[in-house]
Each structure stands twice: as C-alpha cells, then as structure tokens.
Length: 578
Image 1 (cartoon, rainbow, N blue to C red):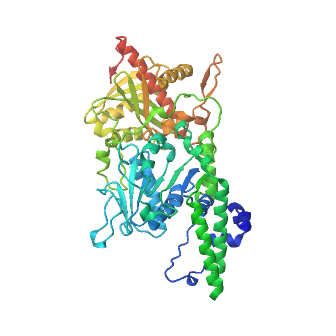
Image 2: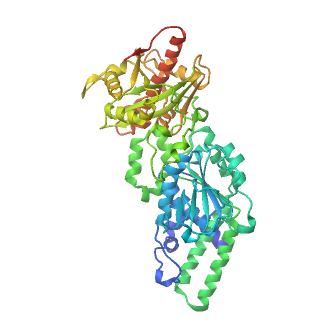
Image 3: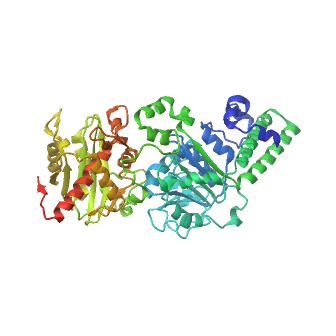
C-alpha cells in the first residue's frame, strides 16, 4: 500500500497524472468496451466534489463557499447512492425549516438526480406515492402518509424532516441522513431528536458502508450557534482520508488497464479492483470526513467572471466568509455586537404551505405564522437611488417586538415598486387589520427627482391608495449614531425600559440581518464620537442589500417603536392619522 499513500493529493494528481485524472473523469473510456448492462454518463464535477467521492466517508461535513455545488454535486450523488444500495431503506433530508427543504434544498438536488438519469414521476415521486400499477415494494420502515416524503422506484423512501415542525422526527427509524444549510440547524435538537433515529435494522443493511451515514453541508457559519460544524474537523483522522483517496487512485488506474487487456490478465486485474474496493469499503464505513472549499474551487462551473463580480458586489466580510470560505475572525467593532442567534426565529403556517404543490412559491403573508391578524403593522424605510427597503414588525404587547420582514427593490425599480410589492404581500392581512404605523425621520422629507412628492408623502399616498389606514409618526432628525448604538445594546440584551425582547424572522429578514451583521463602527468626525461605517453605501458596484441601508431602516423602526412606547406610557399623544 506504500504506492497508494505516495500519491494522495488529488490536486497534484489532476495537475501531474493526466492518465489517472482522465480515468477519474471517464473522459477516455470507450463505452463500447464496457459490458452491455453498464451505462456511461458524462458528468462534470469540481475538485471538492471529486475529493468527497474519492473518500466516500460514512460521515461527512462539508463547509463550502456559495456556488460550489453542494446540493447538485454533493447531496445529489450521495443520496442517489444511498437509495440504490439500500432498496426499501428509509433516509431523511433535514433542514431548519420545511420551507427551506422545499424551496432551496430539493430543487437543485432533484436537478442533480435528473442529470444522472433519474426522472421525476418515473424513478421518484415527491410528496405522493408511486402508482399502484408499478408494484413498487413497500419500504421496510416507512411513513403512514406521503405528504412529507419522497418515494423511489426500488421501494426506498426519504422523509422531509424540519426542526420548525415539532415532532417531525419522532418515532422514525432512518438509515441515512442528509442535511443542507447546516449552519441553521439547532445542534442540541439535532443530537437529541434526529440523530437518535439513525439506528437499528442491521439485519437488512449491515455491512453496507452507506448504512447509517450522515452528510451535513453549509457555507461558512458566522453565528456562534453554528460553530459546532467547524468543531467536527476534530473527529476526522486525516491519515484515513488520505488512504481512501490513494486507494481510489489505484482503482482508477486498474480500470484503465482492465479496458485494454484480455483473457487471464483482465480477470486478474478485475480481482485486484475487487480487493481494493473491499479495502475502500471497510475503511470508509468507519471514517469521518471534514472538508472546506472556497468558491474558487468551482471556478469552471461558477465562472471566474461571476466570482470577480461577487468580489466587487459584496462587502468584504461577506465575500471573505461566503465566497472565500474564510473563518470569521476578530476585526473592527460591530455596530450591533449583541445581535446573535437567540434573537432569530422561524415561523411558517404549514396549514397553508401544505396545500401548495411542490415547486410553487409561497409569496404572500399567509405563510407567516408570526403575523398576528388582530394587530397593526409597524414600518420604517430607507430610501435611495440604488435601493429602497422597508422593515416591518408587530408589537406584541409592550414587552416584545417582532421584526417580521425586510423587503426591497433595486434600481431601476423605485419607491412605487416597493409599495406595490409590500401591499401585495400583506394584502391578506389588510383584510383583517388595515392599520399600519409609519415611522420616518427628516431623510424622508427630501425631494425625489422623478416625483413631485417627497419620500414620505409618496409612500403614504401609495399605501393609502391600496386601502391601508396609515398612522404617520414623524421622528424629527435622525438620532445620533451613539444613541442608536446604545438603544440596540439595551434591546438586544433585554435591558430596555419598555421593549424587553426584540426578535427577527430569520427567513423573511435575510438581507436585513446580513446588513446588521456586517455593520461596523468607525470614529466619527463630530466630538470624537463613533458612528456607523457607511462607506459601502457609496460604492454602486456593491450589492446594496448587504450594505448598511437595511440596518438604517431597522434603526428607524425600533427607534420609532421605543420612543412611541415611552411617549404613550407618559400620556403624550404622538400618533396622528394621515
């Protein structure tokens, strides 16, 4: 095995051993030389994907940058293999939310399956059972109802398990697990609920390396609660991983020889391949593989031009973590240092979502379980030439404020387009409560070059025309950065006099949270006080959804709500109808 260990690095192999590299990519295999029952499909896989396939570990954690093909090129082939080697087996896809599974995880996974030859409603069925006429065998341990499952032609089944649906993992026995966007998973719940179901049934699949396997994928985590996945690197034994890569290199070289030899020599080579394969299976069945990869490692698939465009469009922090896949480190001081995962929540109305067909997008507020139909909405905006955005929330008593959504439009769309989008989304809520509080400061009174109104007048007119009763609350000049910084410190630590808790709908506030997460402090020019660093707003090449615009809307919203609360409790009327 010394020769196996000697040529272990796949990157070096791809550069220096073209013969083996071509074999791995199936590029110089003549299909006519293979047995009649063998089908050959030409697929492109990038280096991280190839490394994963060469290792084939029973447990795998992949921390890869955005656009590296985690779903289509990692989850797809791995889960397809799980289904094929464990007919009538029961696996599961796990996500933080059910909507994540339906809208973000499954579509690219299904695309990957179809690229490898499977066809929907022929080889697999999503959220419905196969036709009885096909006589598809029943799973060994399967669900009682098909609504949250994928069924396969060989009798296997995969459940869709989400952490925001209590009990969705209870009572299950599964044979494999695949989790995408793992940085959003609650690790404690994962350990105490789902991982406990990955057990038993050795009499059916014992000895198969994929049996009770686990795969968790994510881009680089930046929240403290998600750092658990980086700790999984300590569970990996690098020497085992390198040995598995080396074995695969030898297997591919032997397959090349097998295609050109005849007779006894061919049979001898095949026996060697089987022996190497046996070694590989035995080792990988007890191996954990942890890998990190930047988007640059998928430059052939994602495109050099696109990656460079991301560098220009994204703030440095996001580019470093999401694209370069660099671990977040200590840097300049955050403007919202106390914002963390405990302020985030998920809230979907699955009574509504379960009625939708797979592939249908839930595009209005009927999907939001955190929206109280009896309460008014509270809004604040940030305005500009490149982006207009609105933050929306609800005051749950005097103790808690939920920021339930962030919404935006980018140039060339304008404020009227944002108003239409917001009104369309919240139209079902308007029918039960048409009151909306609108907080604005002096920046909303600036003129608009393409409108006869200022921003505030235009927004009020557009929203009122759609049937909303707008309660406008003018806050005067924008509060000093120091005042907003201290307000958020009190709010996020639960120390504010009137609002004891502020929370954010994770899915609906994605860009708003990204904006707040990336906002930094800089030294101010007035009296040496610090202020929010808004330099990225002046760079039109950046994706303005990720700069500080959204955070400014959140500032105005919470400043308005907290100030209004204080004044109302003091008996001072400040709310006036439009």
